Length: 170
Image 1: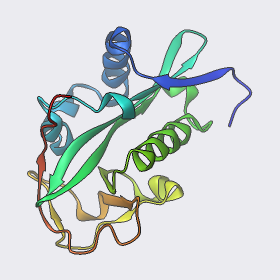
Image 2: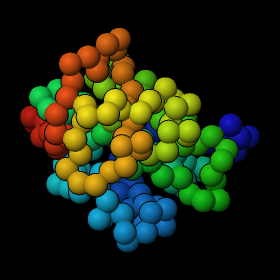
Image 3: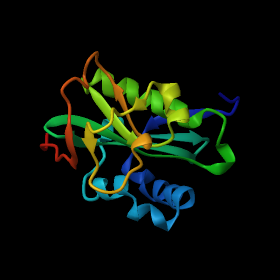
C-alpha cells in the first residue's frame, strides 16, 4: 500500500457523478456493451457492499457488488472495480476488494462472481469458475469468469445461467 492518506468508505449518493466519470475514464464508452455491464443494467448495487477510495476529497477508486443468481443460487457480481490511472498499482484496488469481500462475508453472502484477469484477482482468492458451471448471458471468455467462495463448499452443486436478481425492499 501507499503512504498517501487513503480513506475507504461506503459509497454515498453524492459520489455518483464522480464514480460515473471514473468509470468513463477507466473503461470508455465500450463498457456498456460488455456482458457484465449489461447484466447489471437496471439493478442497483448493494449499498453496504459499495465502497469508494478517497485521497483527501478526491474519489480515486470505486467498487460495487450487485445481486445475481447462478441458476437458482444467490450470488454477487463484483464490478465494476475502477481506480484512477494516476493511483494505479499502489494497492487501492486490492484494498477495495478486500473491504467488499470482508463485508459480504460478514453479511452472510456465499459466492462472488466476476469477469476479470485471474492473475490479479487470484491475490484475493478468486479462481476460474469450473467449466460449464455458470452460463453468462453474453460472450465471456471462460478463463476470465472467476469465482470466490465465501463459505466452504459454497460452489457445490451450483450451476446454471447467470441472471440479475432483484432484492426485496427492506
